Image (cartoon, rainbow, N blue to C red; front, side):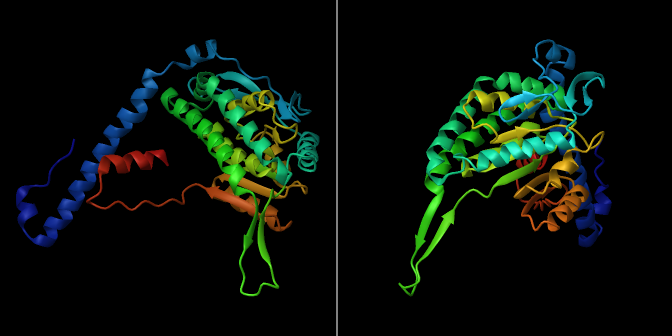
Length: 336
């Protein structure tokens, strides 16, 4: 319940009035935020299928790694996948070992050294991305329900996430043909020609978080594939299932073997993440997650002078002014 400050205290002085007014507005905004949270998050969650109903209609991917366009058994032990709804095991994932990680990186390197990364192959890469978008779109409900069962988000949000994945694949498919290549620049001295060559950087190691499992992965994978890079993706062990299943879409779409490789595992419970980020044959590292982990990864990259992209939590401040639309502001804050 919101208690309005007594009228007498509000009118005692302009300074005190301003203080109480601000306190009152903060309480109102807190109440509005709670209402918005119930309306936009808790209510859809209650309206969504229960974990048991979802699991009865799902095809859980096998506990395998996706390497060189094939699903292969890892040489390490398997890790349990627990339902965020019940806490009970719903699946298992492979816990990649050092040899598994090395095999995935080698597959990516072999693909990059082939035709996939050629500058003349841009149109072909664009067409593959379009097929991947269509393939994912045709299985949108399947992926959305698996996402909900795995990471616990409302089904309406999971559907929106998969739709954004489809949009990202199509966006970069359209961007690639006109973006990559050589741009000639004019200089003051015609004896010194200048040009900018946009080309693939190489093999990328990607580590993604649990809260937007497939969306965070596709937002890294799509531009890298468009550029001609190859990659090894390591999703969070708490929510890996859609990323593993995405390998099916990639292979069915004609993606070059080795362009996308997906490994799973710890930490916790394993060393797949550490083994990947410390691998000496990665050209670039891209990470989304916590600040402490990002700091450790940056130190690992520093030893190899390896370009590293970090998107870390807790760094996005939002300043809200009184005149702004509160409902729209809360929506965007909740979107992250």
